[in-house]
Image 1 (cartoon, rainbow, N blue to C red):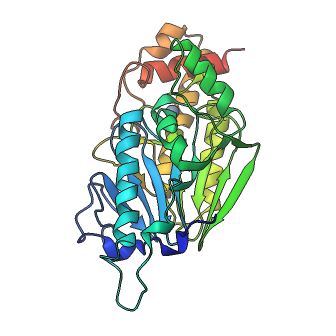
Image 2: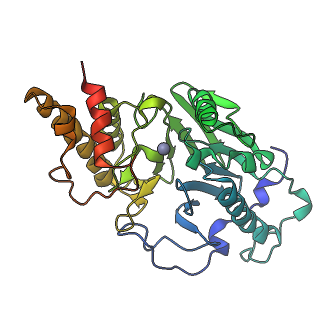
Length: 326
Ligand SMILES: [Zn+2]
């Protein structure tokens, strides 16, 4: 791009003092608060947390990448925060000694190089339209635009919706300064168009809704979900990366948080396995669907919480029954 991304901030130079992180582990030393709702994780990669699925971001001297867009109002707030990060550097007010002040005249209206969508759900794509005018490219798995249109029709149409202009079947990658960002699709899981986003040098993975940390997940049957493959996906991702890899989750129960480790990814895998196993055993024992659905907790996962009727154990068991029904 022609505008002056080189003049963008060294993010670390303008961050406020380190503050405690509202999650149970990781990042404590590296996390600092930026504008409201922004948290830096490491190496210029962080999260924006407000209403809806967690937004991931990268801001370095060469550009800006955003993962998911929540809703229109929170997307506007997020953009404003990103603008603040960039503008403070352009003003030269926080430039470290020895660096040349940047020139604000070189900044254009395009602020975000890439907006990635982890999947089509409204709490992850609802702000796409707000990002659109200031974003070079919107990238998603190839099934996402159609799923988004389907979701939109079911809700009576949404004229503010914006769709990916760049789609991929299995993998997409780009380089922004010293960071490589790779999106991968591992087949149907939470939906039929999930992407796992890896900030490679930072070694941070945005899982979208492939992990609901300690929460009964939404399993989008109508949107192409598949529990059996979801289990394989989580196993694949957890074993492909390391113990040092940090994960961003779309949602999490307050005590567990929206950032975590391999252990949390494997816990979600184990929950989904236990879910299928329970239904399988019920079927083998000749139980009815109602009997299979009558349990109130799954052994080993008593600490899971529900965020609503669709994100409940009963709803999960119902989808599992449909998936296993011959
Ligand atoms: Zn979702």
